[in-house]
Amino acid sequence: MIDIQWLIGGEAGYGIMTTGVMMSKVFTRLGLSVYDYVEYPSLIRGGHNAYYVRASEETIFSQKRKVEILVALNRETIDKHKDELSEKAAVVYDPEITKVDPNEFSKEIILVPIPFLDLIKQLNADRLMINTVGVGASLALFHSDFEILNGILQDAFGKKGEKIISENVNTSKAGFDFVKKNFSGKFSISLEKKPQKSILLSGAESVGLGAIKAGIKFAAIYPMTPINNIQSTLVSNALKYNIVIKEPEDEISGINMAIGASYGGARSMVATSGGGFALMVESLGLASQTETPIVFIEGMRPGPATGFPTWTEQGDLQFVLHAAHGDFPRIVMAPGDILEAFECTVRAFNLAEKYQLPVIVLVDKYLMEGHGTIDKYQISNIKYQIERGKTLKDEEISTQTDYKRYSFTDDGVSPRSLPGQKGGIALSGTDEHDERGHYNEDAENRVRMMDKRFKKLESAMSEIPKPQLFGDKEAPLTIISFGSTKMTIMQAISDLKKQGININYLHVIYMSPFPSETVSEIMKNSKKTLVIENNKTGQFESLICEKTSLVPSDHFRKYDGRPFYPEEIVDKVKQLI
Image (cartoon, rainbow, N blue to C red):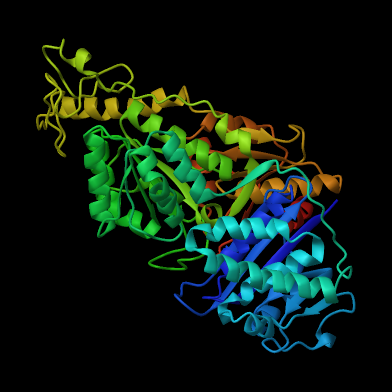
């Protein structure tokens, strides 16, 4: 079974990310399962960038530790990553740029010195294009046909003119031909093209497509890592689907624009990171008090302050659960992989409108910026119908003689009029109010209004899916986690199974309302429980304890800005069982 991980490293500004996605597409078109992961500092130029692309003949869920092909565009890449090389890895480099001593590697390592700069000069191309030489050279190590890369380059640069296409094709072909001539057959892995079964998507693209599927009409997004590709996905589809995308001057104006658009009847969304969400929290309360539906995409990254802005963490869970002053209901969900990012975003818009409250989709840098292959029919076959809940049509509201925007109902959701509807005039202030929206400080009214708003969560529970348990119910250990840790946990479970070790995994998507009964039942029937999360203080574990009064047996936390590796989880499980 072929399982290969490719890594390119170099200084920012040398197209590391573009090249990495290109290699992911190569493996995808070869018919393999793919997942990629990128590391980069918060610098415009300079600093070390690294792009990992893993591909396998069997379904994979995350990156791994060991690297089979390392493309080093500078010496720093060798220093940082040589300990990650597998036993018979290939190291591709330019000896003029990167000084390498063969004795620093084991004898099994294959050194592939390529004159990147000389090849570039012969083609009269820019020095920055050494990255495309590296991609072509890498392809030649494991595949015999350049045409697959040629097609990807044509697609990627087709709109930039024939000159740009030719430069990229020629430089990558030069690297490909050099390896075929000088190193053919030396690398241990050979890949043949198989039928392509999947498409390659990032988590951010998946969120953007989910919003489009849900009928989004307005988005206000101030660019911040890691949600920027949500914005670019929406922008590239805006004219086709009649979407207004606004890049506001700051996050405060952005959220207020989105609330205004939603109040006017448009399906509306904001996307931001933790720092941006911090500026939005007063308006989060505004949306709840006025019972205006709104979808938030909150991309976690390490804090506090600007913290570790281009790295990953799950440190915003408790923040989004309690953000803004006072008590009010909100739905919070945390998708675990690229397909779930699509599904949760689609579902968020319906939940927001049906229950007239804020819905927060909690994601992170690892999920947003990683690409993975998913079955191309999985997304297209998702059944979805836009449900606007109790949003009144013109003919419905015209028959009413005493319209009350915040009327008390059994499910907590009041019929909602939109501006301009005849007979639907209502007040929507930020103070506590009565059924018509008039300011009201009566004690009994306050209690009834608070209870009314919180009934929405009780009503929503009936349609929110229960957490999914993966694996044997009788396993000696149950992992419990949320969000993007799902991908690495699923990979660890697969790796453990090959070693004859079976565990199970409870994947929790909904943080609010929390599925207390299901989690309690699983924990009580488990021999041991292990909570895995990407933060220092155990925010998810605290939520479990709060909602179930049960304490997990063990926990595993990581907060260095990097995601979990499956090998780390495998080692932890072995220690426990």
